[in-house]
Length: 339
Image (tube, rainbow, N blue to C red; front, side, top):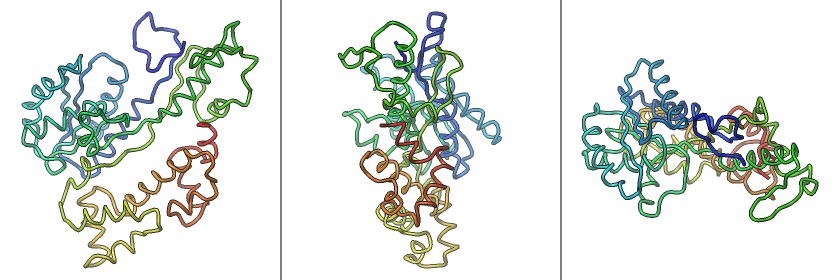
């Protein structure tokens, strides 16, 4: 058996697990929220004792401490889906009392939805008086899909986690006289090809210290949405520029060409874009292009040599350099680990 995010406790010691680098999730969430230097931060959670939540919160609070910023942490227990609305109501007074212009990190996407609902009831505006980010990149629940589409999230690499789990199972099978049972199909280990999809994973991830250690997979990137956009100046032309970037970044749109579409100097445009978004136009362009790169890499038949052309980069070399800098691996190894 291989467990995803095994909990703490004596009975779980020694189990083989696959776990996310949850401290990195907290740090990435802080980086996204801190872009416009908000005066205060907060974390909201529905669990206290689960390791994954604790690690995310501790890392986020440590980032706040290093930045010299306050960070309020609140827990609102939620054990059943039927209690969701009650949880939202209990959250309202806490959110209403937070400082004006506060950045909030919810421990996962489901609780980010609860926080967004509570903010609306508390009279707080996303993203004018508050920004909000969740984590996991889960499919939104059917009953609140439209709201979920407005909330930024730290996306996790669950696909890689699946391959790591498969690799861990294969290693367990190789150590003992057992069979590999996946999706109701049982095969002997001798029938599993040494060139199976998991064979390239170990080069990307740190090897477990022992056969029973957890394999760790990293968060992927931030899915930027309305809840972390436009925290500063709400200029219509900047919001228009953001939509242009979403539409045209992968067609070769540059920051210089974008600025020429608006009145004023390039310097003034860059300054106002940064005030509104917390980062320069080029950063937004690169972010959109990398999202497209990951989509194309997920298509096994799409040639890697063509990805730069289809995502707006000037050359394959430029993309390869940026990709390795951001994801600490090459595009070829990235795809190999997920095939």
